[in-house]
Length: 116
Image (cartoon, rainbow, N blue to C red; front, side, top):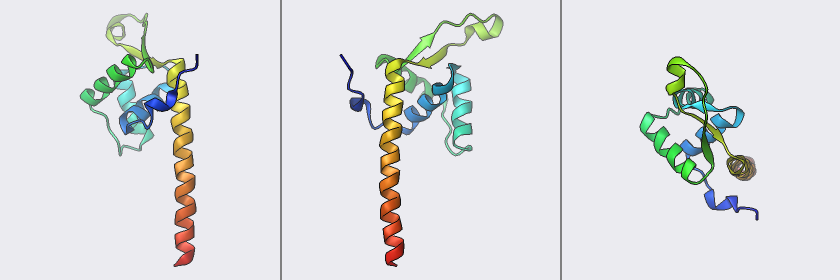
């Protein structure tokens, strides 16, 4: 049975950035925070509370999962996260939704500019 990904949308900005960060590879929390800052050219920064609250919610919804990390030393204490199959579907659906919204906005803004 196919799960309805629409029930997870729209994603909050924090959740969207977290999923985008995990789309390419699994990451630990600090790496997610750094990648979110990079994605937004420093305009959007996640604090630890926001990050881990969102990760807990995303894991509860089975959009993200914690992975087994077999590193040694200090790296072994870090928890790594990755998108699930459902998480990829949610992210893809959200991207399509945002692209449609942007397309509509460009149409309306272009129309308004030509009317001025």
